[in-house]
Image (tube, rainbow, N blue to C red; front, side, top):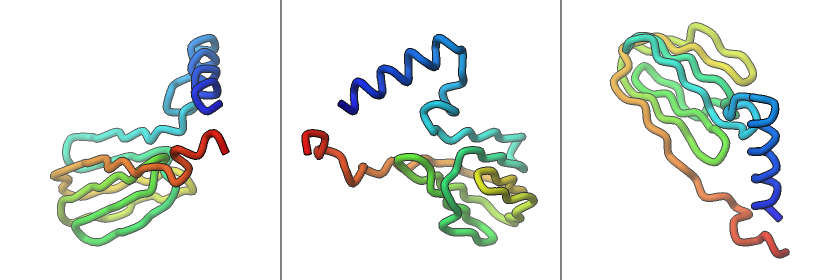
Length: 103
């Protein structure tokens, strides 16, 4: 059932030319050099410090490391981070419901 739903969403996205990050709940990260990161479609702030930002996103977490971090803007599903960004990493998290499709 899950595979059928995913296929329908993919066909719908292509038919209406919708960006995949919108229909598939994917995070969108825009870097401006190494001084700004604009993150859309996040599900919440997990960790914020002077040198680390961790966000929950659909099926995982985004980790950003660096130094001198400042949150310039934080909305419900968008964040603008400023600082010296050295690394951006996505960490997938297995779904709690994975393997329960037939239940």
